[in-house]
Amino acid sequence: MEEQEHKHPPYILIWIVLLVLTLAEVAMSLYMTNVSRVWLAVGLILMAVWKAVLVAMYYMHLKYEPARLWILAVSPLPLAVILVLAVISEF
Amino acid sequence: MSNAAVATMDRKPMPGMMVYNKKLGMWVFLLSEVMFFTSLIGTYVILRFAHPDHWTDPGVILNVPLTAGNTFLLICSSVTMVKAFASIQQGNQKGLQMWLLATVLIGATFVGVQAYEYIALSGHGFVPMLDGYAAEGGPLYGATFYAMTGFHGAHVTIGVFCLIFVYIRSLRGAYTAESLEGVEVIGLYWHFVDLVWILLFTIVYLI
Image (cartoon, rainbow over all chains, first blue to last red; front, side, top):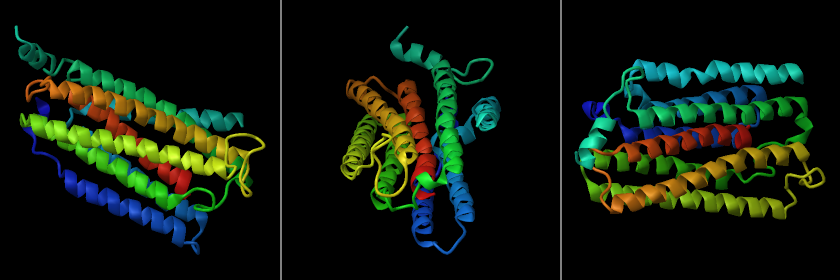
């Protein structure tokens, strides 16, 4: 009962952070027209990754799981990079 | 041995990954899903770099405010899902049922809004066909848009049906504080679907 050994994560706080980041993303995308699209895209992707990490860490409870599950969870990331690079090389 | 005793034994951390088998199985499945969505997103990025003229600026064709609202709904459904799990951890059956029902309703609303969006877009000629695209942009825009959001929508739809199954079981008292793996496993799937949408919304709608 590994979940019952830790306090509940701050679910509502994470929810508020996710909402604020989403609103900020939409505002940046629609109204920051004077910024380079490349830099805007980098900023938006970083914010999206931040949100995704929050969901994985707190809502999927990865933060409270054994380290071995962590390793399993990140294992497809290098494979994903290889997949994308392989497709690029064929293009 | 009672069902509760068997379920408790099932939830014991197993040697190796140190989590119970059903949770490990769901994680392995989700990792295969990571590769699936990576192939979609990777292909999208490559096509977009190769043919930038097929895409328009954000908000020109796609309805960003509508989908931002839908994103808000899906994020809310993740909160209701963790609330359902937290309730049953404390043995609160009513709380579990209420939050599960809320998750089902919000998930179904997300799918409904997506269906409405598809109807509206196709009405303006934005369809995944070579000769069917809006006045601006090109056919790759529609093809990649429907492929990515369609596969995600299918995942949400499957998740809603699984949640209905778990909800019906919860009405029959199938879950307790000692036997809650069914709630946790569907919760992992649901949060993953939310996580993928967070990335897709940014990549498809905002960039």
